[in-house]
Amino acid sequence: MVFSDLLFLFRFLPIVLLIYFIAPKKLRNGILFFSSLVFYAWGEPVYVCLMLFSTLVDYVHGRLVYRFKNNGELKKAKIVVASSMIINLGLLGFFKYVDFFIGSVNSVFGNSIEFLNVALPIGISFYTFQTMSYTLDIYMNNEEPQKNIINFGAYVAMFPQLIAGPIVQYRTVANELRSRKENIDDFALGVRRFILGLGKKVLLANSTGAVWTEIKNLPDADLTVAGSWIGIICFALQIYYDFAGYSDMAIGLGKMFGFNFPVNFDYPYLSKSVTEFFRRWHISLGKWFRDYVYIPLGGNRKGLLKQVRNIMIVWFLTGFWHGAAYNFILWGLYFGILLVIEKLFLLKLLNKINGAFAHIYALFVVLIGWVLFEFDSMNAMGRFFSCMFGFGGFSLCNDYTLYLLINSAAVIVIAAVGSTPLPKLIADKILMKINSKEILSAIAENIVLVIVFMICLFYLVAGSYNPFLYFRF
Image (cartoon, rainbow, N blue to C red):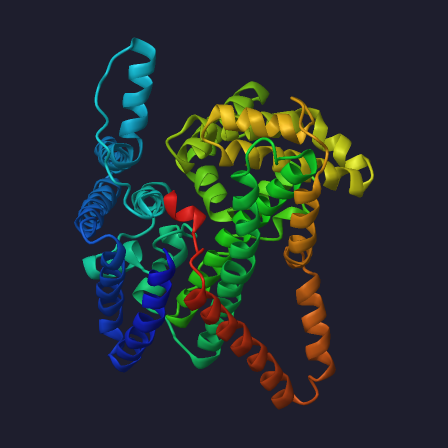
């Protein structure tokens, strides 16, 4: 989603909400389905057909799995589940990974196969995992299939979280698809969550991202050790606010329509281990891999050796899910190895030492991981690592680094503090002081939300830097 898409959302959303709440309840899933297709077509008109195909495939497969399983025909049910996985992963593999595999074959065997240069459909990794969870939930958890294909289509295409998550497993919204109660209190909470998410994205992710982009593009002569650390800290804040902000926007929009989407982030930079970090970061993706890969492989129930194997498989797949590039695989394996080391002995040690040291360890290894994540060029990655640790003749600091630090210090501090519960605690205390007068409390909160929303609109209209990092996944 780019600048024009956000403005399209602000024009599009009031119309959809008006039609949605005027319409009878039995028509609301249909309105949500159709409006979601329109929203997706704004950015990806051709690939609406792909989404409709995925919807039809999994709707049919889900019905078949349920019928075969209820009839005791488990072999047939397994074949249908396998068919669903092959089709879904085949589509994802073709659109997202075909050129990666062609390039790998060319490198290994010296071939010159031409790249297909297939455009990546926005959000395909997210909605493919959602449709797969439907068939798997029916098979593994005895979830009843959706008989109404329009209701199922609303689940697959639901525009609030279609493009960049959170990944909503079918069983978490199955009842709400059949029957849900929209009310003014939930709607107000949804608006609040949406505006706060928008503020995270536009005011904090964009501001820290601009600093990182400037540092990343510096020539070697201007890059310094201090500058490289400032840069990767800004990237860490950018990717957090970018994705957490969009997740909050999606959760807020879902709330407006009567859905309760899962929380996707829980202050991950407070973590004192990698294990804790990934319990707090992109929670819906971690839960998906746990439920549909790690546990079916045996989890931690079949001995330490197989548990280590299962962790490494999950993290190889987690890295590869993010993109068709070796740096994502490296990122996944890096954290897989760290998680295994923590599982074997390090976690016990971290729990015994001073919490501050454990926190520093977690932040350090996560920042190293973000370098692996961000640089798809191994040469550029090596150059940046050399600079971070003072190898290769890079200076510690220079005038440009000081200038950049002075100009970005306020943004970095605000973003760093904002990634902790402190702002919420302060806001809650202020509201408690005026809570005796509920009207004043509501007015104060709404004034702040309106100000944040208006500032975001100003930045969107006036600025051109507005990337959504996770849309490429």
